[in-house]
Length: 230
Image (cartoon, rainbow, N blue to C red; front, side, top):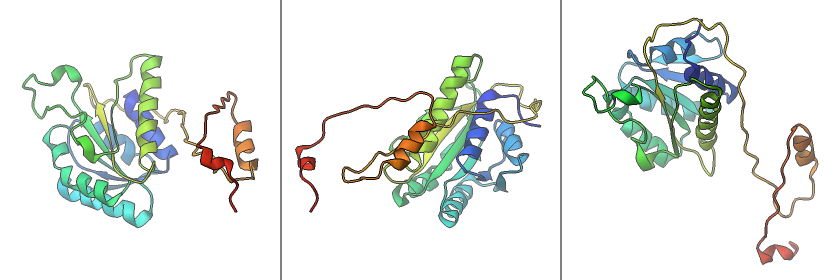
């Protein structure tokens, strides 16, 4: 059984869809719904590491060894700050790392609540993308949450590899595990386009034929492309 928190269900389902199945889990309380859901799904290989600083570097090793993005999940507050050295390493070494942090609801930030600090954007320029997920109450919330997660995961390999940060606000109660299956989720893909000298468009045609809605945008090219490659 999985958590009833819909933003977490979207996150876990999309991690699975993107093939990000190696996850380092740091113990805490606010991240229990994430930890429970990941560790109880058979497609994920989870590694428990108590110290966040060590866990961050362990996650980098998993990504380097497997050639695919690895994820690390920590609880709220200063636990996230302990990942800063590893995030910096991943950014400058171009390692695809997904940092997942549980967080208090926004209403409790700055209210002297324990282990509470402004977590969204905490890594600033050391991550390629930082998103703060909404808590889901409506269909639009769910659509927005799905979009943000897709955008973050796509960025791990966009114009070079690197780390991204997904912050997940979670309201109490934390221990409701009533969901039997992960949801069917929308997976957004990025098509990089054809080279100007490409002559084989079959792959593009096959790809477009799979979509119910299509849009082609035609723009201006540099004049240098008027000349054929010799």
